Image 1: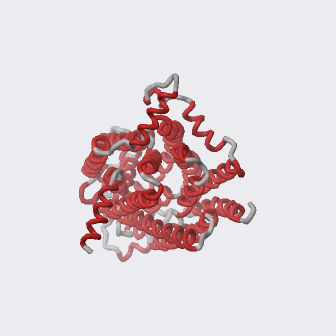
Image 2: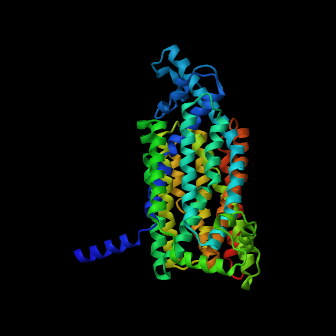
Image 3: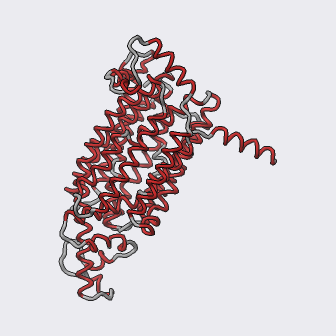
Amino acid sequence: MVQVIQTWTKKVISNITIEPVLIFFLFGYGVIFAGLKNFELEKACATKSTNDLKVCGIFPELEGSDVCKKLFAENSTQPSPMAEGVNYTAEEIEHYRMVCAAKDEAVVNLTVLDSYRNVITGLIEVVILLFAGSWSDRVGLRKPCILIPIAADTISLLALIICAIFMREIPLEVTGILHQLISALGGGGHLILTGVFSYLTIVTTESQRTFRFACASIVISVIPIIARFFSGHIFKALGFLKLCILCTTTHSIALLYGIFVLKEPDSDAKNKTVANQNEPNSSSPTKKLFDMTLATDCINVITKKRAFNIRKILMFTFVVYFINFGAAADTNIAFSIAQSKFHWVTNLGIWGAYDALTTQLGTMLAIGVLGKRFGVSDYFICAFSVCFTLIAKPIMAYAVSTLKDHFFYVATSIDIFDGSKTVAIRSIVSKLVEQNEIGKINSLLGVIASAQSIVYPTIYSVVFLQSRDIFIGAVFMLAEVFLLVSLGLYIVSSCPGS
């Protein structure tokens, strides 16, 4: 038994390559989640109103309290009858009235910011990803696609520290856009995923690949769940500045490990050397990054003619993948509502972790049982997932309309198969292209993920701002529309002979 354990331990250690980079980066990426949401809320209050900074800083203390609900009724300047059983002085009532009003105003200002900052950062990520995947395939370098986004994210944390020090002096727009802009210039999380799976594709044999992909997927799924769960507690314990310093440290460790310990794949290096010898006008990898043919090569993956209508299948899959994001793009609005109406801070991280955990378990169940055990098609798995999300969205709308926060957990528990759509789509496209197109196809999936941030968040922000006083759950009903469209497309594609 001991020998078996030692053998497995050696096997695991010998297979460790990219995992330490992912662990340290994803921990920092996840643990700042609740703190960053609250910081942006406080920044909106500090820069967009004349309230004292102490008023803005008291937002986290509202968690677990229904004081805002009890002190005044909706759209009323008079205390609600619900306030009769609360032992507050007139001065305290006025103070909390000011705090709650300031928080609602801050949420509106943040929503306005979200309506256009995602357009800016999304466009940049689209351009970066169009070049990065083809560049990585052409020059045979995988590490830059992993390390450059981490370096950019580290710099964005330093920018957040400066913005937190100068709370009133640096405007909300600069704070909100700057850190996301820096991350986008580095390619963002989508480029890291492109680099990770392209790296693993090269360093593993076909027999090892499933095991190594599974290990990486577990790390990518589990670490953010753990980090998000504790993010609110760590934020309350450390404060935002110290939290940023902690995340900068973990990012730096990931970056240093990637630079000095992680090796560039040997087979890729050999392929790069052969390719460069065969190119009469070969240039340095840095110069090749600005070669416009990189973008055209990436686009050619879906436009070039292929046998058995594969080109049409690829295009159709990408269209459905993009529509899918229409139903998922209400996430930021859901977090904003949870902050303003439920006053979540630690609960925000816990709910985010619970959502990620149930999604992971549901994905394993859907892929393992439906896909592997019963052999159903990937498109059918997508349709199966959409059906559960269709049930969950109205429940979320009911939760925010009645201020019953526990229904958020009910909706999340129902929508456990949400992540299986992404896995199934990636599975579909990976089976339709050649190995030397893996980097390009992963980049295109990242491009679509970035492109959705240009379109959908703006739509949801406008709908939220226009409907919040009439029916605050309208954004979730809009998601139902996108879900119904994608469900119809999945059903069509699942039919025999389609």
